[in-house]
Image 1 (cartoon, helix red, strand yellow):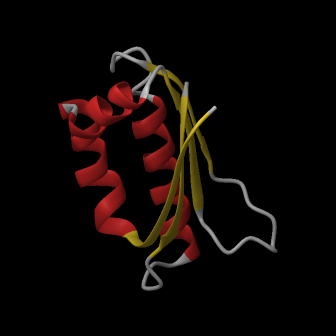
Image 2 (tube, helix red, strand yellow):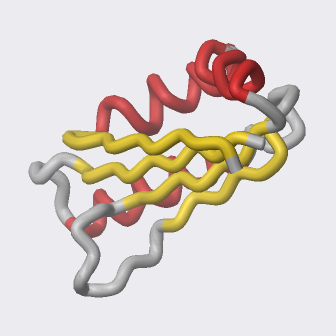
Length: 100
């Protein structure tokens, strides 16, 4: 199994209300990929944060293999979510992939 963890910071130009809506859109879009992309075992998006957090959104996903993760990155359903809900709204992205 392979874990794929991402932390995003949203752009500073958004109000808190806009950020809340963006967070919900990212969560719905990415979690909606479960059962759509082969090899994607689990996908969870965390939007609720404590005051001590300096990230806005966390993706925690699990794949059958590194090959499944690589296929996910180019799958049209994932690309659609990434290009419409994530990339236009994000200023910083940190990724950690590892075998679990």
